[in-house]
Image 1 (spheres, rainbow, N blue to C red):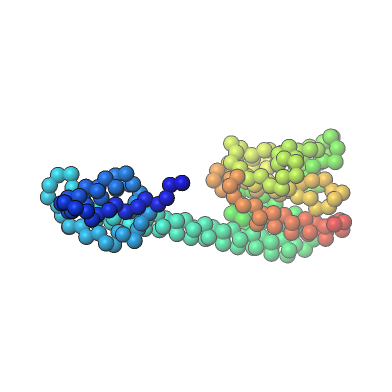
Image 2: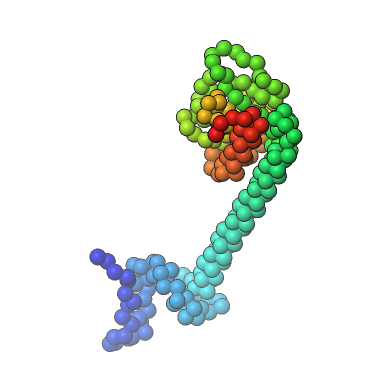
Length: 242
């Protein structure tokens, strides 16, 4: 098993300075990561500010460049963390505001109006719709304005069986889901709704003209929280079983 590279022997008979320089050079050529693996040695370097002669490297410049690259990398990571944190905080504030708005509904019809008319502005998207599957294969008229009826089995077809949510970029939205606004949708979030064990499955659908608004790498916890709250409100207003 190979161990950590050993430092070259610098003492010996004969011309020790020449031997040491040649030995160190050969050792570093054979172990190019030695200084990286032993950063405590870097402060011991005493480079000249300038050199005359050919094929002479300024170690001070090399060390300074590496330190500068490391500082830049850490700064970029820090700024990325700050950006992600601000985005998460903004999304959380939006969802909390939307939740409070839904809880202020005066009746079931007012709740549907809030979800399909007011939430788009609260969540900074272009359209929000509610969808519910038909109980059978035949065409069924939407029970009220703002609700879209889907063919039986369509929710599983769009999300996948038992998949709670799907976020993705699209060329255009599904007209059955977004109605007249389907043409402007370039990314969408589809979250499964299951208000009651006996009720047909449904969707809370959000669409944006920004193709980067929703994508598969995003977390869905906040959107699922909003849907769980909506399911509770549905059960309360419609007196549905848990």
